[in-house]
Length: 252
Image (cartoon, rainbow, N blue to C red; front, side, top):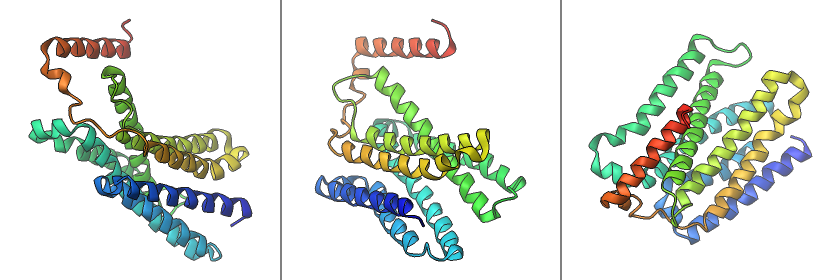
């Protein structure tokens, strides 16, 4: 591990420790236990990876195992944010709990199934499955961010942005960094190796900064959907949904 790599890793750990302290002090760690577990695991995993970086074989094993745990914990943290924003829907519709896991299941079948049927030559089957699952998690990050962004536009009010939005935004920043890096590698080849190597860790540090800033955002309001109880406001909101759908469809 080079000096700059070590600097990025230690810098990331420092920001993560700062974030963990803020989560405990603000009592957000108790409300969002999976996100807090994700952050604390990131601190532990990065420390372990740095300590075994001298042995390439051990480094690879530890890296892929920690990546697998990272992906699972990130998914659970995203579900926490999703549940907090759509809490009323979970209460009103018994089937709503299936939306998130069903989406993950479909994406997993597509990406992991493709990895098993067409395994990459340069990666082991275990690594291919983890990479595919990480892709699934990145899709969920991006999809949830776009969903929250659309809701923020449709239901814009004084209660936006809130903490769950900040959590999802941080995950989206991290996913975008990885996406841009690997896209550049696939399109331009080895010319962008530095971007592939340093893009994801830099994006992750930016994501941690977003999460730190999110600790100062207000919590998700309990009456987020209160407008739907008012007939006039409800009709206006539905019309705004229709306008948004027409805009997405290209009908101005």
